[in-house]
Length: 468
Image (tube, rainbow, N blue to C red; front, side):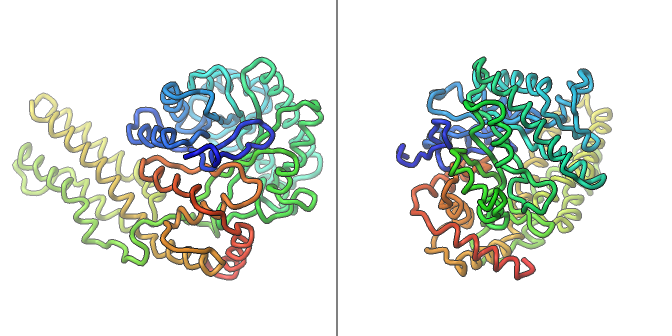
């Protein structure tokens, strides 16, 4: 893939590949994730986005180990800070940082310079770099949403919010001068909201805060969600009559968009991808039974080997066969895994270890069991995803009705191609945890641009008129 595909990342001087590698759910120690990342870099990708709280630092660790094998000069490394969870929660409870937003149990937030200093240092260590190319404040709107949960947001609250932004920018300018970062910005889910929403984050006011810090400021990048359903960044005129894309384009601000394939719409998540061949019938109970057969046979092997019983004593396959039909998506599976599946299995293994741990064949059986359980989880995730193909087929029909040209593309390619056709968009960050996802997405920049604004406008109007 040639350099002609690269796009300016605002006025930063960086040239970014139009598809960025989203590091949200990747983790050190996962060989598939590493293979996908290396495939992206080997095929010409150069922009990697992560955050301190993605898999509690493990995303940064994987990236740091892999990028050592590539020319640092050709990569654009973006990371973020602000969340207080996991390891950061332990740190915050021992340090008492100022201006912490205690949003919920186990979820705090902070953009005070004292906290940001620790985050930049720790991120650089995990990434194994001296300088971070782009450092973003990660969802600072938690300050506003917490106030909204407890009452009315007034002008004074907005003034305080942008004061905190300004002071964070002042600190980040010092980090630029000391060589710790090159550019900075904000990742906010609320950039796309209408001005009538009191929790809206204004790019215009963020830029004004940067200009208050100094004319030579390094506020150069924003990030926000954008997809076929969440179109505010492209269509909502919330910066004195201009959209986020229009305002940023006029002011030399690079725009990264996340969630291009995960749309939150009317209290549900729509995955903008194909799961089986378009128009195919979703797999049913017989397919689920087949998926679980290797695990079921291994459990019967336990019963005959250790208990002389004809029935499996563990029952993990039976448990999954009962629970999975009640789940609607892979996201629901992830929610159910811990309390309803993994915890009972772990408790059973602990009990069995005490009883059979000294037997020479126990370790072999246990390893095989864990391997088959994990394989079942992977296959069940795909099984549940395939149940959503009817929705995907509807999205494809809606895109074509909205003026999308051509055939023969996957839905994920179509959805991202629309975004890449929007003027002012620097890069779409796609979660590509598997090599086949990389192959699918890196074909998109080779295709001609479409009329992205008009397609989004038409698709949004049609979606709003339906119970999508």
